[in-house]
Length: 397
Ligand code: LMR
Image (cartoon, rainbow, N blue to C red; front, side, top):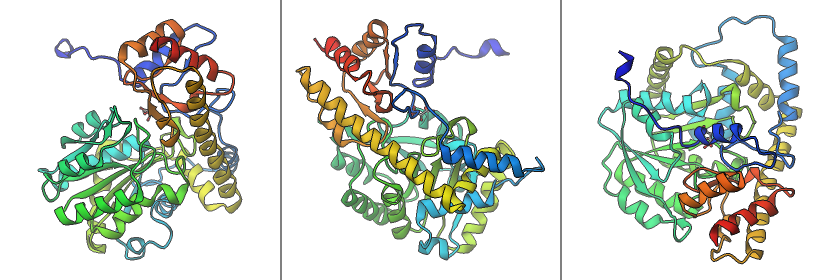
């Protein structure tokens, strides 16, 4: 039977990671996969995570199952991070959250639940979006559509075009929004735009589906949750998926969540029963180790303060690197103005160069980025920024 399967192209992001790992060149530079790197190009385990992990291993005396919904302390901690500890929806018992295997697992669980709750719903994805949104939500059985988001020529959000498309959506459809640090373009909605969008969703009966994979890496933990919190104040139903891959550096541990805001406490209980049933059918229970670490970090005041400081360092470094790259590119006097990169947030921005130029950067200069020209600014450091800027200037000649 397997002969019937079709060959597939490599994954748009992880395929580049594989090419980078296979490259033997000593000076190769990785601006591809969304993984934080420090000034030495390493992705270290956070000190807060290391300490929490040690405490957990020392105290753990059983590996018995936890629960379909995962670690209860983790779920409570995530709810407080996303909505704020005193959010009226939390107090009213209108929020149901389950721990999931990474943010991707969260999207998948949410996708299956949405397809069960409203099989005729359409999910509108931003154009462009994280490439894995499409296969993941399609596998869950959802019908997908797209709304224009980023104007590649003007390097900004095309909010009018976005709203015009969403005005054509029907009540019950979902709008997948990047909570902060838009992946791949780095251009986030302003507070005013979130407010406009909340009004549009309210008026047209649309359900916000917020992918919050980078909380804390744009402006701050509370600031980055602005959109998710606002939507939850204004609308009866909201879905929020989170990830601890980036802001806690727990990539391989696969820690995330899917959180559902319902109109009433009774509906929230229905959601919890159904989402637990979906998770049980997909993978039974999420892995515990990473979530136990997060629960410890979030509920231990000393570890939490250390994590908040480490997160701030990552955020400040990313924002500083954006400015450094822009300044270095400006001195090369290329035909392009890259100043927009300094105003974008998170790990990613599009350089706005062609696929051929991206391939030349990879093959001639050993500088790796996604073929859409998405770069991960965390891969830049003071030791390699000259080489990166020289290489980009060379392919632009
Ligand atoms: C990325 O966008 O590079 C990350 O989210 C990693 C991934 O799984 O694609």
